[in-house]
Image (cartoon, rainbow, N blue to C red; front, side, top):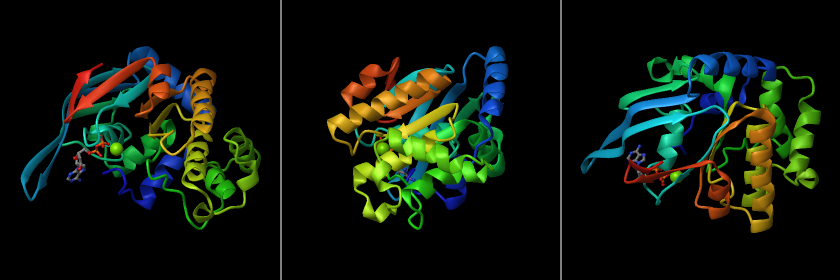
Length: 255
Ligand SMILES: Nc1ncnc2c1ncn2[C@@H]1O[C@H](COP(=O)(O)OP(=O)(O)O)[C@@H](O)[C@H]1O
Ligand SMILES: [Mg+2]
């Protein structure tokens, strides 16, 4: 479901306000509201040729600012749908979501895009890199969209942290799956978002590169108080998270 993302949405995620602004909003509003993300009776159903399909049902969550959460469950259990809903990339058919005290589910697409710009980084399972741009340009783009004069320096530094200094000028089609994944991670990190969602962030990486990425995720979690919400099958990654949420056929079975 999250694979069908419009260019506007990708731009929305990549645009971000300044770091100061994010921190001011986060600290002010989380002091009034305990959870940076709250869901109440969240559900998503779709009508298929076989009838109504309940993809997610009755999801009640409180996720605190700065928490790290692994979302696990078998293929088809609803993990990608859940993070797409929490990030405002998809809309539920039941219940509500509050992000930093604001009701995401009563907003229109422009409102959701605005909140994504303020708060969210998203790493797609299929990366969603722009094919006409080099690795460096892909990572610079979210910073350029907000007028950051240091876009090139910051993007170059982040690509070095994911061990891609030798691939700056390559377009996505000249990169391996694992390299594209690291570019997508760098692009999501470069704005230092308050909440980072990632769908299988180590899925295409060998164990050594995976360990580098896991360290980077948790460095950011500590350095910037970033809330991490990670869909993963990777035991090593899940073990580093403070909480694990397990989905089974669209229901939360453990938290
Ligand atoms: N728009 C849709 N229409 C019909 N079925 C869907 C749609 N989106 C997701 N699904 C189905 O819902 C289930 C959960 O999907 P998904 O959230 O992608 O699971 P996961 O990420 O855990 O593998 C799957 O069976 C998937 O095929
Ligand atoms: Mg999925």
